[in-house]
Length: 248
Image 1 (cartoon, rainbow, N blue to C red):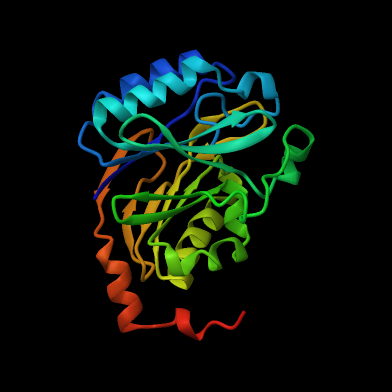
Image 2: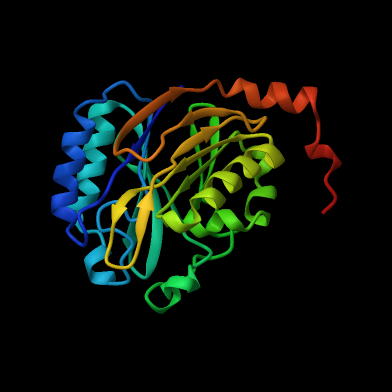
């Protein structure tokens, strides 16, 4: 399976301009089975809900992208009162909506958005033709319990983010830790560029089930791709069966 990570700087609070920028960036990449973009990918990490909330044109843009490429597309936006990750299937339908569970109080996110429901009613799960994915958004990454329960039925965790440059080392360390402790692929996509209150340094990456680096994107804007084999998860879990030793 080929995965493309879109590491870029959205145009601040201008979703139409961000769509145009993404269309140009993605023109260079047409071979992916799965395209992954950051949290609030069209507006930046704004607490202005009106500026971030998707309209029909936003949904249509990603639906058409998925259909044209016959690919899955995972991307962050805002719907209603929720910071949301959407997964579009190759037919352009929204196959999954996951509402961010842990709001970033350091940036007063809880003043603008509501936390997502518990995983029982907000599972964030989808299946990419045999690759079972569990979704997370940015700050969720710090809370390992969100990942543990899903591990037995998950081959890949998808973490989309607007993770500040001041904590870049923590981003990389936590992505790798989640891969190691859950023996699964972790796909982390962060943005780059500056906003009025934050700067971002990318660091998007794919880590394998042993914690090995499959792809590390550095700090440049662009589309970065790598191939993974979902069978590696089952093989490593069989060779080193750590999950069965967990104690609830």
